[in-house]
Image 1 (spheres, rainbow over the protein chains, first blue to last red):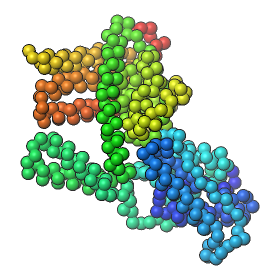
Image 2: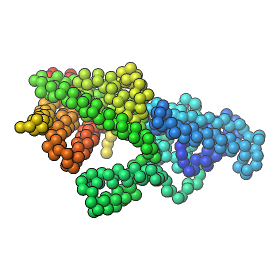
Image 3: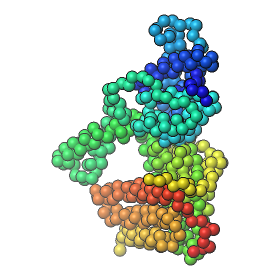
Length: 363
Length: 105
């Protein structure tokens, strides 16, 4: 790979300095192309953290399309003018592409993001990656530095766009707004009163004060997105349906495990399997992982990349897992009926045996 | 005894039974991963059944609601703890016991 390249990939997300990063990327593409005669192209790639088929997240996918549209418009604008603002018709042509990646997996750690970006760069033969200094793919979790580190492990050239950061950073970790504050305040106030048990003036006042403090401190980090009343209610409703089902599963499976443990010959056949779950955000992965652990015979050992590492006690517990009823139920809670129809892990062929990593990390 | 008292006793006894199963499991099962199964589940169910009995004993009272919350937290924290322990083992490269390792015992 040469020192520099006119084939550039720019990871895209909502960020205050993205406008300048886009300008820098197109300028660089043109500069390098005019020096080396290479064909210039800039790809704006949006790695998404959630699933776009989700009926209730449609507004989120519109947001993605909107950001990519803006990137395209800005780039086109930049290409018409050169550095001193003069109209510049005879510049080297730069092709602009936009793409969304990662819809089909669960992106969590910086290396997950780096993987999808590098995969894209390899497929399209893009030699250079320009990262926006305010880029935060992880939403509230700061992960720019680890992401850059992961990216620079590849053979691509990775650099941070030399643009001015906006110093005033009220945005960390996410913007607070009224509905976040209201949901947070309501929940903590309700919980306080529930524990207090008596609705007298003392409890009402101390409760309001405590809930106020909790809201001020936490409402910005508890929610990544603004809670919408409709979605919240639908999810809560479906979650309430899920609880008896889960309890029943727990009871059934516990009896099975009790039988195995008390059986004189201890008929167990443990195995670790890797299993790629078709769910896409933190809360549903947590719910699924905990449900799997609660259902006897299966235990979530690790959530690694886009898959769960599961230790199962018996063959029948493994079959139950591969049948995917739990996974389907979790999808039903978070994404509604349509998502519940996705085939089971066995049908998708996403279950495989797994061995324990033999290179323990040194502290 | 009233039917309610029968129900409460039944729940608490079932809770004790699953607690017992968990203990037997810890002793009999061969390795950390399989033992985590016993502690995280039979134990959870045992606690949940006993607490369910306690809830019925309290009847319609704030204490019952608090017990319900306690149940909820058991459901969240128990699997999380089991996950944390086994994950630590997994990352240290501890091999799970398999059926080939020891025939039956």
